[in-house]
Image (cartoon, one colour):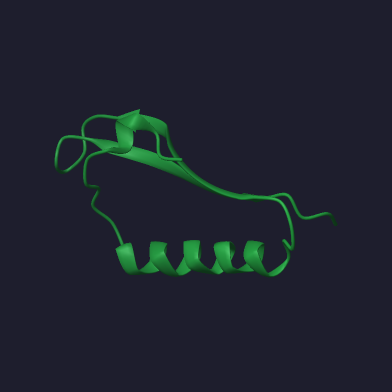
Length: 68
């Protein structure tokens, strides 16, 4: 799920973000035999001014239905 206000490109360390999300998602897949896995991204904080006019804080979540 992607928040509607995250539909525009963001600047940041895309490789690091990719690695982290891949790791969390892989772990969720590994430990979830049945059920679902949901990856979410949403804006937590939207501040101005930044170097380019806007700074935002984005929260990424990986949720699975595996039992502990």
